[in-house]
Image (tube, rainbow over all chains, first blue to last red; front, side):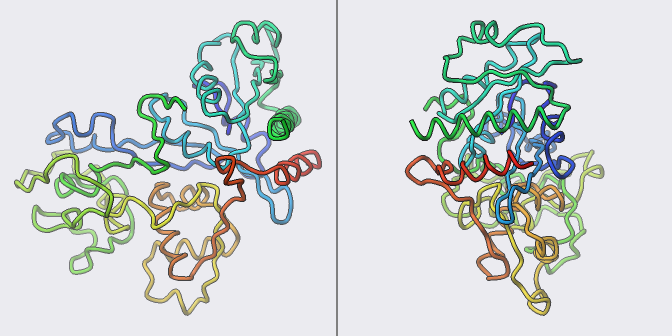
Length: 174
Length: 194
């Protein structure tokens, strides 16, 4: 899973390392107000679609890795619950200029127990804060890797994925 | 586990009771799909009147309506002409849950011979044609522009009919379905070789 706030580069990250152009799947959900609001005159508001971008990497003849960018809005947690099952882990992309945007994702993965790493996406190649400062600011424990990345570059995205899988492996072996 | 508001621990999709029931007959449709399985007697693109419709069928098991169904006829919304004619769950016969839970990344591969496809619904045929090369449920949804939940149901139908094979992702049931160590090692090695 690739998570993070709106516009932090999730789809860019997926596209950088995916072997296909990122695809978009849509889920249909009833609106949060269904059953409460009078829907009589709001026929077009009974459903909401949640879009999710994803890519794929064929690792072996019989092994395909899928990268799912999570829908950003908090009220689509149900999609995250579905993605967490069977997931290796999550990369939480962070724009350090908008640190608070990643709080919901960090909270979610801490609670769900899914291994995650924090990747600081340096916009325009800048990294205004170093990982230690971010660790302090986010109150992230020493076990969770914090790395810098550039979501536009394949090598960076690949390296972030390797860090995540290594971390997930360590977590399983502990 | 602390599930945030609106979250679901049940493992089931909360596409929700309001779909496929109640107001369906009054709400024309967002998605323009080529067929509506439950409406074979009439032209598939015919506007729906207030009469019997697939949405008035009994709901699928386990899905409880939030409120009694309203049958009182209402005028069609003025903006109806902008909407596609078939609601997404029409092609599943109103079912909102597959017969069994398919992972979003489950892989689907067509096993059907061409002659077996005759008489199948157009959506089923499209999925079978697409999955001559292995595809995930997510890819089927994206490439055929079918909502994810609908794709899950249609694929489950095909699997039940023996027309596709499904490879559910390997997971360790003792660890909440998360990948086991062997799989993680394979993924790691594969990523390093990229």
